[in-house]
Image 1 (cartoon, rainbow, N blue to C red):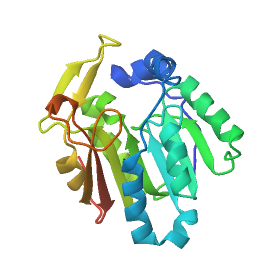
Image 2: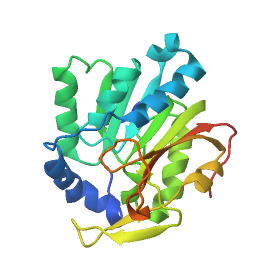
Image 3: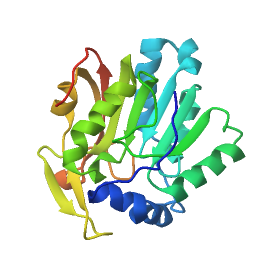
Image 4: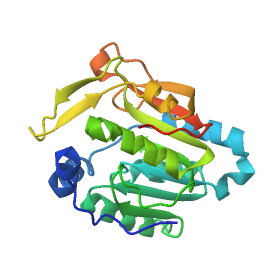
Length: 237
């Protein structure tokens, strides 16, 4: 089940800032940039999904990218997984751009883009076989993380996969966000938190900031894609 897109009144914090202004500002800064990545992290996801469900069943899978921006990674994932895909983002401009992209590619029958945020997913329970945080957890205020990850657990099927593409810093820390002094960038390894929800950590891939494979010597710039699979029901209080 898919609900209505973002109409909520947010409280304070970075989520509100990204809904009101910074989401669109990010889109304007980035959507015309050249991207050289071959998205190796998506190929790793494909490897595990095809192994679990079988390649012949991939067209029956449902996947969701949270923090999809203007849809670039969502479109690439759809090339690998011929099922039904969704992307959400707080930016109205990015979502409109992604929708037009899906229409121009003739993919709007199986790719849908919705303006929403990670803490309040407009979907029913156990809908998705894969949920991907596409470079967005670093922007989410820490007090919202329990809500965000419980929402992920709620919308994933019992054997669903959770993928996290983000900074790979060994200890929790934050840096100033250069585009808006009211915000912070958070760097953290989320594995312990996600495992406490009943997920098993099954794969990890190190990446450079251009999206290619590699382990950066500077911990501040390390990026990774971590893949987890849902196992047993738990709740994070």
